[in-house]
Length: 606
Image (cartoon, rainbow, N blue to C red; front, side, top):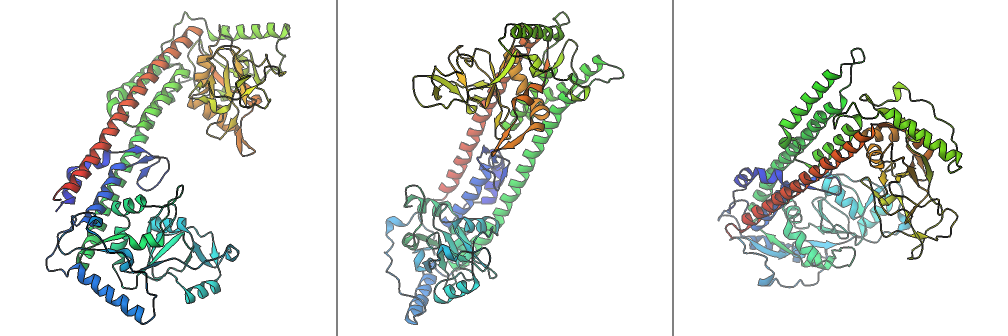
């Protein structure tokens, strides 16, 4: 007999450390984190329960075969009394079908032998309405099973419900509803105050005419054994289905009635412990996330006292804050979220002048901006670009943070040679033509090449809209989270063009490097202060247009410092990626360890 309480306590680190990313939120999760260890522990508890390894057997308990014989006699009597219909004879259970060695006093039965499994009468779509008696499909039964309530979207009239109940089948207390399509096999015990009808084929009903322990049956129908069995034989190529025939023929493991009660009580007790583990782990993850966020915020929130302009003091404070983080680095950066926060902080420190030391001999940024203005004036004189109306000077209240000496704030229009929209020409699949970059091709500050649709070389937009190495592409249209994505084109000049929902920013390499500008436009502070306040929804998508983009503000360091910043960011991002890789390896090890503990527990006393 497996001592599950000891198993939980002895392997507590395994259950709470085995964590992985998940695609959606749900029970036992912290944001998009799945507490896989606790999930496996829950599955182990249920599997031990239906194998007879969770609670001790009592030789004085009435054998399960006696319970099954009583149910068979009651069923025969109801058939004789014409209260239920005679069913098709279920096949005998072969020795090969018994999934594992059963404890003394236990038995097996076809699920259809201990009740009646059927479905509802057909309800036509024309009978659906917006009020009345709830009409549930599989999705609503899943909601009921998980949360105890469902969103009532469909209804039928009270009169139709009464007619269907009188003439056919309706849910009664302690019946079991079982989903038949999609997420199949999910059980829900009908409560005494439930009143609903259900869709035929989508939901099956186990009519509990013989008062089989509904709690044990629900427990069994949530066990890994049950789920594995029904899915291995599930029909349907794209949607899993559980038919009435297959449900009737499913094998049920039957303990003595008294042991069923003990099993249910023990599972309830252990699931409550799992709830506590989940809650404590979730709280720990949340607290860790907040701690990392607040400590990293101390690095970017420090400002110069305008009354004293005490740069030395702020440098000392920054160093103290950083040392506090460095002293506990191995404890702080142990999750994907914390490493991602570190990456974002690195970017933000970079554009604030806090990542690399300043060199007083570097040519100041104000001179660089003057060079850009002179180059633009020449391009206008040469009629290569149009003269634009100047934007207002940057006010103090617009500046998102303090800058080091020799740095400047600049609007993007003044920090670049020109900006322009891409081609509106419709692209097509083909090998002959010019590839057109689209918004999905900008990922993590990079522009992805390959697989793009093309436009003819002969269109009027070209060759003016050919991209050159170092062009920065800004995505003006996307979801609210992704609008404003920016990436630098690193392909061969003259090999690609770009679509109209992207905006090209051409840099003056001798003044502002495209690598630095791309980095700057991908920082959290840029999104928070320059993009998010301007997001507008148009035709179901967010949009921050070119006019707004030109007025956005970036910090401009001296040119040599730009190069030092980009090199340092690349170095630190590579280190962060190494941290992530080691973390992924450690998480994989924890998951394998959890699997090993589960396997060992199931094999114990086999």
